[in-house]
Length: 219
Image (cartoon, rainbow, N blue to C red; front, side, top):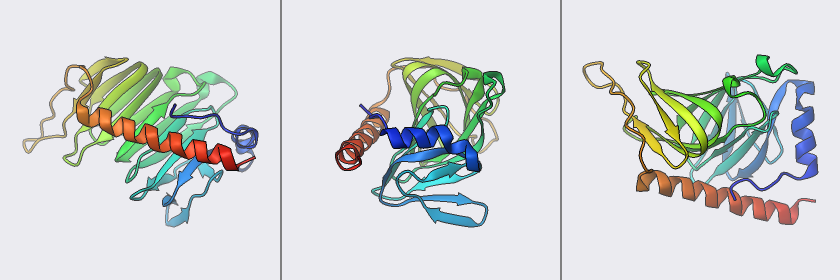
């Protein structure tokens, strides 16, 4: 599977991350993974803590899995990036908020134990409302955004507010604003295209392989 279990030490780190303001950890890291907050940039290593307002980016031949304090899991394929805009893990579930902007490439998002209303996943072309789910987001070079749902469902809306509900086993695509300033509604949900399926499978394979290696060498 995509997400092998974390070792006990890593799990404890996620649970105690609040002490210094961090909102999660890098549970899996391969090659070139960077974190940027303001003018500060760093190389992210395995088990490094992750912070609010941090942009996480993977280089060519690189990948990462971020686990937030509520056990939300975000995997990044090579040449992908996200910005963790907001992550509030209040003891009161109704006050929790996880807002993530997908800024490039392919990511897989598996929601954690916060209420569905706490999650908002943004893209340049629209937003994704989460309903207890596991889905893949693919940003195309032409500015399009495709979303494929593995479990649960999501509400995909373009920047004009037009939306569709995507169920398990379906995908939909949003096109960017055209030269006339118009944006089409999200496409009708249907079986994921080969491009989406291949991208999701590649990310799955990379993270699964990394986890097998890590579990073999990390006590």
